[in-house]
Length: 230
Image 1: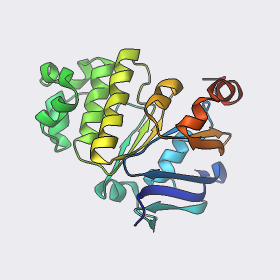
Image 2 (image 1 turned 180 degrees about the vertical axis):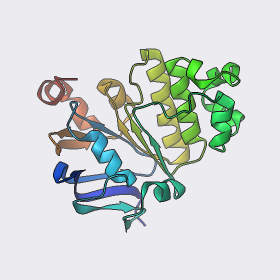
Image 3 (image 1 turned 90 degrees about the vertical axis):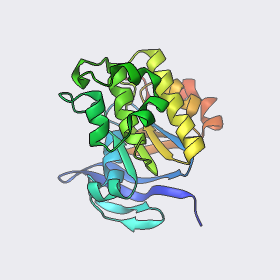
């Protein structure tokens, strides 16, 4: 039996008649952290939306646990998909504790992942720092024991130390729980420090892919060719 949790084959997707992702092959295996990198507008977020079921394929297919799926996003989430958008995935007018309760996540689960959440559980989420909000969002997602987590720009606007903590948590849950993680990340070097496999996107296509050990040695070249606008 394959360890592949989610993948796409020959996937094209976009908006209206415009395909912004074209002929894409990508896979995420159990326990694997996959980094999807590229300059702004390369098609990374659209790739996540297509994998999540929010964008319908124009061509090709998405597979979930080895089977072709056309299920909508809510059905994929019920089946074990977690999705963190680049906007903070918390309800700002609820307390941190109520955010967890709404996601059916116990406070002790969240605190085990992020001890810094303990003292702020009674605080309204909108009054938390950006780092605390993102810890809360990630705790909500991981507390539901997803099989696959799609994370879009987890580190956006956050301090480097917070980014390090968030990414370390992703690495840990991949190793210890077998969660497959697809990570779109602007902090490329930090992303590669926890990733197993890398896809580089440019103008809707994957232009380079490989194990992180192979890609890391070409990072200066990749940044100059594909990431200069980040």
